[in-house]
Amino acid sequence: MTNPLPFHKRDFLQPHRFRRRMRAVILGRRPGEAAVRRMIAPAISGAAFMGALARSPRTIGACVPSSKMLSRMMATEVSLPVDGVVVELGGGTGRITSALLERGVPPEQLVVVEQSPSLADLLRKRFPKVQIIQGDAAFCYSQIPGSPRVHAVVSGLPLLSLPKVVVENIICQISSMLAADAPLIQFTYRLNGRGPLHATFDSLHFRTILFNIPPARVEVFRRRESR
Image (cartoon, rainbow, N blue to C red; front, side, top):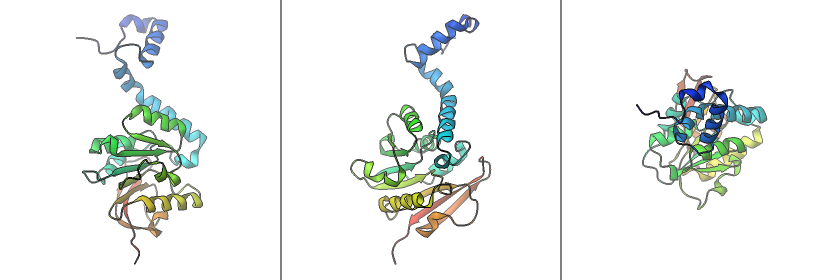
């Protein structure tokens, strides 16, 4: 059976050989690069997440990345086919991004906004065909070329931990770019009661994910039409 990795038994017995080969793989100079990158991707993502959390805990808003179950539940709320673009706010390490792509959202119709430079760089490496915008969610729509129709907004932003004025700016931005019939999909760790979005958007339904750490709620909103 062919060894899928560019390592041999003697490499693990001789640390200096292993270090040289691993460095060559990471830099893309050896065969088996894709296999090894898949192996080390979780560790790289976790390190990037913890680094961003240490630098700006209020904008990250969680002690661990979103679970796959939570990410998939959010992605299922996006209807297909996509008419325009799907905008993800707060890309993090890419859990929700990955779920949206698995759902069937074309990468060229997915725009991810992430404020942390290190996490934005990680997202660009993980999803080279997706448009990654490193910037503030409160001003993101002006940074999307062509001002396309927004089919859905998927938000992983920690609205409950952000300053009120920042949240108000983000809500104003979402309201201005979201089509009248398009959903806003937001998750929160507040399992009951009203949040900052309820004053501007109509809540359609929500689902609770008790097995997330911590437990979370996915809620779907629509822009409230003036009466």
